[in-house]
Length: 146
Image (tube, rainbow, N blue to C red; front, top):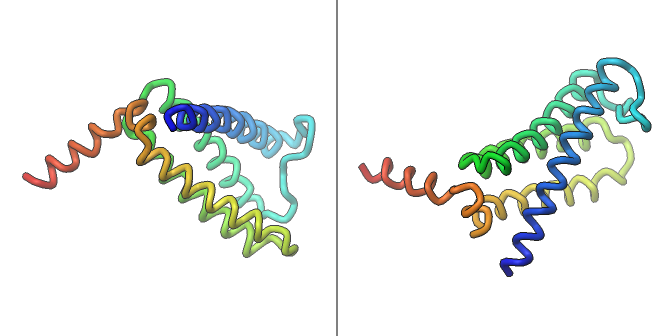
């Protein structure tokens, strides 16, 4: 099981790198209009929604990457917050701007992935060891019991 946890953590790290690159490339196209290889903008989204989209994707990759490298103890909590914001944005994009039914299965699978990623970061021993998250929980318990 420990091997699978390491693989999952590695996949999260690779996904974070991909999200950061994708988010920055999206911002590049958003601000300059220059298409970086393939068009990343979605014409169905208003400009403000598109901006928040690239912002959250960039934050998602950047926060996890920083947290992983620095072993930042707040990484699991920060990522749960980022995932919840991404889920909220995904809900808006799916139900307000998507006109085709194909968006619903993708929407539900994305929400499920955010929940699985969050649970892994909060509960897995490898995540707790990497980020020192047990210390955060212990500090919270001490403060609560005072």
